[in-house]
Image 1 (cartoon, rainbow, N blue to C red):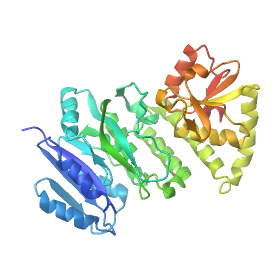
Image 2 (image 1 turned 45 degrees about the horizontal axis):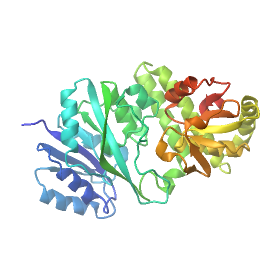
Image 3 (image 1 turned 135 degrees about the vertical axis):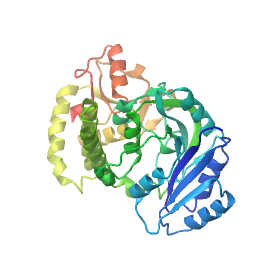
Image 4 (image 1 turned 180 degrees about the vertical axis):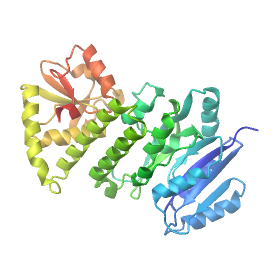
Length: 381
């Protein structure tokens, strides 16, 4: 018999979505599979729906029904500890899988490649909100398929519903309970034990909806979220005896930029940031020397960079991106253009992408000089 795969799911108030999530697991062609669901005392009908699904699939569905609301972090820990398969696949109660061979494909890869601890894949976005989101979460320009813990620290985005890993013990240290979102904590703990593989297939759907992590409420608590992520990395740095400290320091510096830019966006709530803006404005104008500004990176970081530039009275002339599917479209009113548009005599480039190192090397091959012709946003701030 093939090894057991445990599907780890937590849910709270997902009555609109939970049945589809569970049924997407049940449609998998992998034979030795269970789904372990932590239900955290929902105030809607989520629990009733799960009890009906348990009756429908008594040998496949394992329910963890809390007697009182324990919160997302504790629910995650308790539920994962109940997963006893050799492998764990992850799925939130409001997302779902779209490929019936997803588990089989990921099991095949992990079982045949012992140096890898986990693998992930592309996911499409089911946008049920008014927020600007791409059709797929991962850029089609990404050509890499192998990643490491340093990439996790540097901001590699892994959507939880695409993940499958070997089931190794995860240390739940005291400071873990202060982490708001546990996905990255788990990724960090797992990635110490092996490499990460990207499978270039779309096998899951990720919902963006008013009650999810991209809701208006969560959009308005970004400063708090970034500070919490910094707390995670600072403690992880100590936990690992500073083994990854250089990468962690760079990542924390980038997060400080995110906090700074977000405070600018919410200037009424953070009036103390005005003086800092004036200092950075003076430093930036010395660098650009009457050239136009181009932002490199048409994602969320690009939007935040534009917010900052507008605050200091600069409108970028282009947003540069390597993804040809974005060329000719606009990011907050600014044209997205290919790197061929760059001219070092006319443009100063600010890199706002998580792939800073790759873009840095790319710009150098275009005969551009760091500091003189381009820089990363966090180094400017």
